Length: 420
Image (spheres, rainbow, N blue to C red):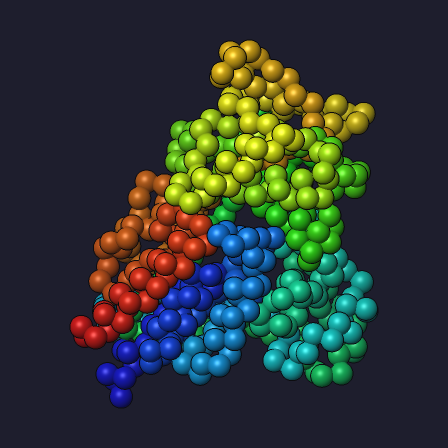
């Protein structure tokens, strides 16, 4: 019985890399526990409008993986879960997991009856605060599991309890408490993902100060059909469609004061988003301010296509500052054109900052003696036998590459268990 227990795998992080690791290992016969801190699986991919290389909507790939999870009894998932403690060694790890209360149980059918009676609202973090949800909410339209959750920062619990009265399925339990889960696993994969770099730290670019300065992930949500504007790219200040948009590359990246590295996907993401603009607004002009364009391998064709578009203008120059006209909320982007050596001032309606990818492990360290690089990413050789890394916990990479690293991590965990 003890030997059987050590043949299990723990995957920390339920984004595309964590999900891939879990299903790949489970489908060859291993027991897998997948934990995720959010109330849903899918990670950052769920927030994208489209992703490379096929420019598919995210649910195209995620739905297949969710079905694989549903159909495989070897995969156990826990959302709203956090690792608290790890002890032991390869083949015999003891793990303590904190399960935070959802306040909604498995009886939930997502019927929406609770929404009609809930009087309280919260900023919608899935849409980066660009709209609001009720205090009880479905994290997103395609959430897995498809179940509501209550934000206890905004819910008044027993003082209100209108949702409890409205729910005919007895799915809401306002007395739920955090629980502790003990696991014994043979190996662990860290697939803890990434966060957009905090653009409020870049004082000269105006994010958080000017409404019409947004980050690239916010642009993805604006362009998404399940986003705050139902897929229409509109200025946050007035809800109007922009006619001139500036993309600012390396916003905080390749900068020793912020992120010293290149995140490798930002140039490609901005060109993708430029096509979103051009599809919705055929007469709109797009300016892309860049230091160097980096579109490796087959992605070069995306750059060449953008160069041929007469409405997309590439300006080689680092942006010095962004200023707002208080009356119109339009923005002036000041930069030095490195090719003409002229200082330029471009007036636009909307600015999109291409912020880089910061590992979640920059701020949160795993409760294990694993090794990190100077930027907070987990090293491929974690320094602990039986522990492995996948996806953007390892380095800044795209979805396709994340899946590759996840498959590799699944193989390594299996090899680890076989060795034992």
